[in-house]
Length: 234
Picture 1: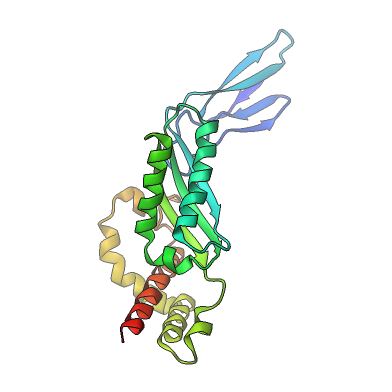
Picture 2: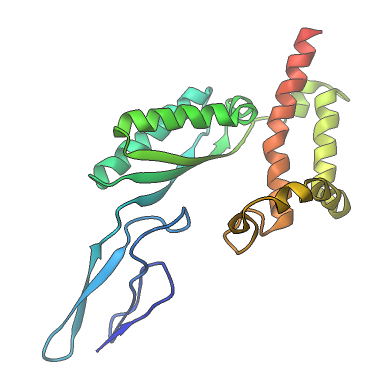
């Protein structure tokens, strides 16, 4: 009359007749297990027809907040946008503590400001979230994946230091040997990380090449910002 499937942590109804359901787990443990978690309350009538109703049991709820930063001029625009999304989550999940990861994408003038000081903006958003939620919301991480609306090479002039830097970083990304050489410099540090960060599909470093390419992308705006500051001082 009813197939109750286990192991998979994501709730899903596979078939209506016979009713076949992954109820998911009862508590999200990390950002890969977002949304309400709980169990399925199943009622079977005298004809063998089953109905399942979801019942939330979680005491803390995880979310991903996706922010489109296209056109944003300042990091404070991002803070305002993130707070707006947090207010929506608070209204829909009344009473529960929430943990959220903020993921930012889009082409925007604020890219260099965001990318050169990611920790500052993580703190700004975390502080605003704590204030808005009365302590109910914690920002687990801020991931910035923005880009400048124009290529920085166009602003640098032919053969300038920013152009040379960007060309070199592009070369590292496209050359497996250079990328592996970069990874070798960080191996000793990675080995000291907790096992859950180094192993398994959900681990940030499980895909070595993707991790290194991502790392270069995060470092790039920091280096550009420092080059510009140095040039302004001379």
